[in-house]
Amino acid sequence: MLAGFLKRWMPQGIYGRAALILLLPVLTLQLVVSVVFIQRHFEGVTAQMTRNVLIETRYLVDRLDAAETLAAAGLAGAQLGQALQIDVLVPAPGPGADLRAFWDLSGRVVVETLQDGLPGLRNIDLVSNHREVRMVVDTAQGPVELRVPRGRVSASNPHQLLVLMISTGILMTWISFVFLRNQLRPIRRLARAADAFGKGRHVPYRVAGAAEVRQAGAAFLDMRARIERQIEQRTLMLSGVSHDLRTPLTRMKLALSMMEETEETRDMLRDVGDMQRLVDEFLSFARSDALDDMVPTDLSALVRRVIEDAARAGHTVNLETSVETGSILLRPQAVTRALENLLGNAVRYGTCAVVRLERLPHAVRLRVEDDGPGIPAARREDALKPFSRLDPARNQNHTAGVGLGLAIASDIARKHGGRLVLGDSTRLGGLRADLELAI
Image (cartoon, rainbow, N blue to C red; front, side):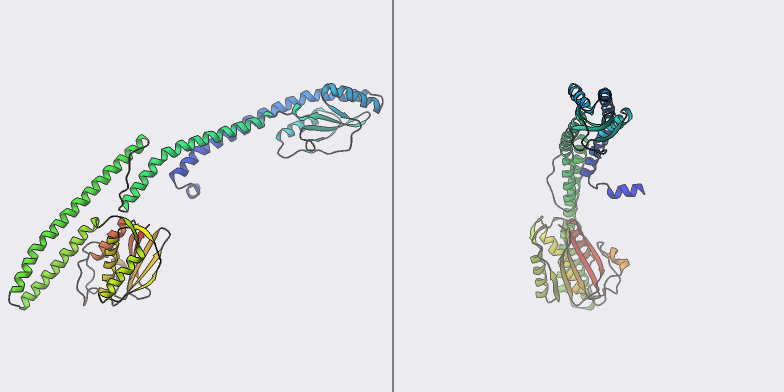
């Protein structure tokens, strides 16, 4: 339970956690020093100072008790009080009451010490004048009021020490934050570069920071270079193979077209056409990694353009809703191909398609729905794999595809930091394909 509570309320970022690790010991140390050392030390100092004043106060009260008349007591109090730095008011102005502010911690020690050591003490007032301690004491001539400077009974250094300690703590915390920010900056740059590379962007990154961070940065650069080389080699190899297959297929198609038209030649021409389409789709899939670069693009205009092209081709495609996304960073040719593939699947297996462009908190979503047979939930994951063929019922009365349309769209979505999600269309009853692109 404690682990779950800490996990819920702990900062999620490395900067917040590092700041917490930095501040927690500083605040704990200051709290312990303030409570254990300062409070105990200055309470003892205050008690000692109050006892010194208490000796003088007792002597003054004894002299007032020895006076024969109230006037003599007033005269003796004035003379002796001036020498002892204690103001004496004979008689006392009023009955008074015990008064102390709740935040006056040293005042508690003053009150307890005076009450324990001064007989006849009626009340102590520490509030009427914060610079004085006012006491009403019973004497033989009646109650008198004694006023002692506050600085004589309690130390004023605790406030100075607290201010100095807090100021020093703030200064050192600020210096630590500056140092911490400089240490975490290379980690954040590495995280941004890795996140951008995962979305298909090449962000310049220079190794910097502590030894461990530099080691991680160098490993990232090596990994990125290896992945880019592998992608380039795969693209070149697959493109070369697909391109080389076109020549014999073209020769076969030409030879079959010159032969006498029979049932057998028609079947062979159909097979050659299927092979040609397979090679074209295979080449498109191989080149999907090197379509274009990330550029600011108006996605709303791109979607409308693709839908207009589909309508001119004789397909029933409607744009239901569209938000103005403005210029966002993406690969326009790749997104165009992904949307064309989704619309091609929709009109191939259905009669119409509906497109929605929506804005999410950190992404945009292109939703394509059709009225076709859809894809069972158990087969949707397989439908996103390259060269995956679904049940024959889905391809009934349609030209069979090669199983790359959804795979290419899913690959393009991943290269934009998003995903392709398949589901059921509640409106048209067919397939719903959500192409999500991170922004």
